[in-house]
Length: 87
Image 1 (tube, one colour):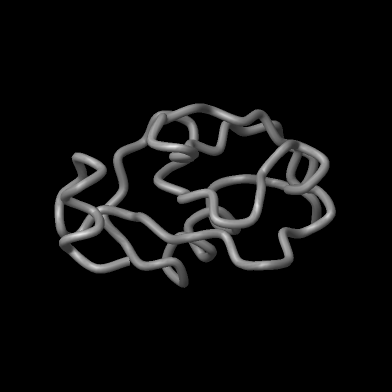
Image 2 (tube, helix red, strand yellow; image 1 turned 45 degrees about the horizontal axis):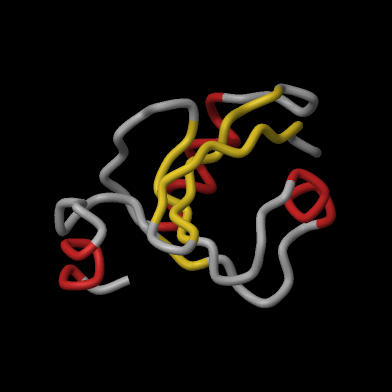
């Protein structure tokens, strides 16, 4: 997302914020993550990173089977979605 789009969500220009694509993983879909949700964090952490860095962050800090709260913006509202991580 652009810095301007992030600002509209109340986020800083370097904050993690990416739009979920057309095909969420089966685990994400089962948890309730939808196409076009804007992913902005995990477990209440304020992160400044790209989507690739976020993927690495999750792999380095969590294990398969861990339950996390993915923070998303949907329809202008921030919400947490509990999800069990797959391998």
